[in-house]
Length: 386
Image (tube, rainbow, N blue to C red):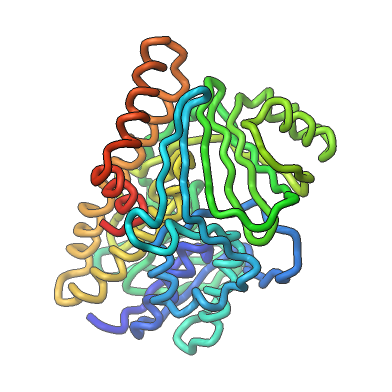
């Protein structure tokens, strides 16, 4: 069936990309968003919420026709990735090793969302329901209808839930989740450095959790600091000048001067929906799964969900809709679970203080650095190129 009528709940990066790709295929889209998107200014300070977009995610944004709309001064290509345990040798990845220009790109989430919304606003087959929330869902094999909080009713062939980790749709559909708290928080600290734009992102593992550096455009950067909640709350209470001194004393070593611009934090929680669809309603992105942000794969997994579902809807249109949704679940649920599990094993292993485990970790990093073809295959997989 072509030109489906589709309701998309949630207009963040995953929801907006889904809406744009389906709308460009001719589907009739109803986009429901409780917090409308506004286009930021290109000279504002950098937002705390940034993501590392893989080569495949960049390809999807190019396919949607929006990549070139991101201002150059808000986009940072990174060509190197390094990781190590404190006191050990570094495992280094370099884009030159696999013959490409960059391993990925770091950009603010709000800018990706903004350029997607700008493109959606130009389309006649997209209807926006802004400042609205879903109150109820009637879900059947033959179609779906929703009631919004202003008593508007919308009926469609398919509902796609992209409404985040605390998905209202998932709850209204009574889809259970498997979840646990990592009992840690992640602090984000935006800084302005005394250097030009850098192109290497790195992560140092410690017993208290990782410390990471993400280069941003120009001389900006984001520091990522994992620690227990009490420590993070203490850090958040400091002035920017006080926080700078603590970073210099306790964070991974930085070989440049800097000034703190902004700071914030969030708890680390894993969630995974027990099923990805029900009737003609389907979950994408954080509504279906959240992952430890250790390797920056959250948004990239969400974009892989988008790519898979859009491809199935386009190329398997002769199948019943529920068969398409089942195929989507069979492809994406095991892949997402595998990435979640791998990150959990890596995360928990990195925090173990047993000397034997620490020696094993250092040995594995050393072997990985010299593994040649295997290391490059891992790099390509993380970038979505395999």
